[in-house]
Length: 145
Image (cartoon, rainbow, N blue to C red):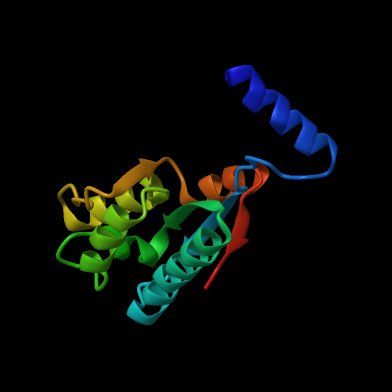
């Protein structure tokens, strides 16, 4: 039976068909560097809209939101104007991740005189700018709302 399915797939593919074809995976990096609730919500809207669009096409999308500078406040519990939305979207969209700039975090912590906590959804990266460069070099599309 296994061989029959494989043979059918090869035959249809050879004839230009797309039997058992899987959807494409897209990659998007979204840049957040402003402590502006409207800008943060726009970035989250972009992520949700891209996710919905590709899901309707039968495709997948991997989205990484990179926050640095004043935008890092997006990922600081109790300070983020979009904290609840980040948490709920992380649960609803398993291919959405949040990268927090380590340089900004270090400077914010030094200024505060204590370690600044980040939301559990955030993953620390050494540098937000370098992370955006790496993602683009890895084929990610770049979006700055």
